Image (tube, rainbow, N blue to C red; front, top):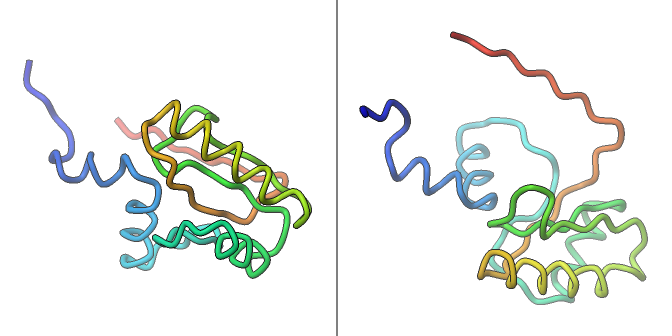
Length: 115
């Protein structure tokens, strides 16, 4: 079987939401406002959430399928949601690194299949 697809480094880069977002930003691709930096200090993340504006999504950088994700609508709920998200991410993916995104209400998904 011959594999037709991107090279291994591209697949690895897309496995991390933080890395893939950095690549998209460098390529001037619009991304949802958020934080995908290395500082994982809870108070620093909470400050980033306030900068982004609530509601925010806390997402495991290596997550998928809705696991390791929490919607936070109020600042007073942030630290508990962060703790829960990090526990789930560590258990499910072996890494508790998270990123933050502004929650987009009523998003539209448009997709084109090209064959």
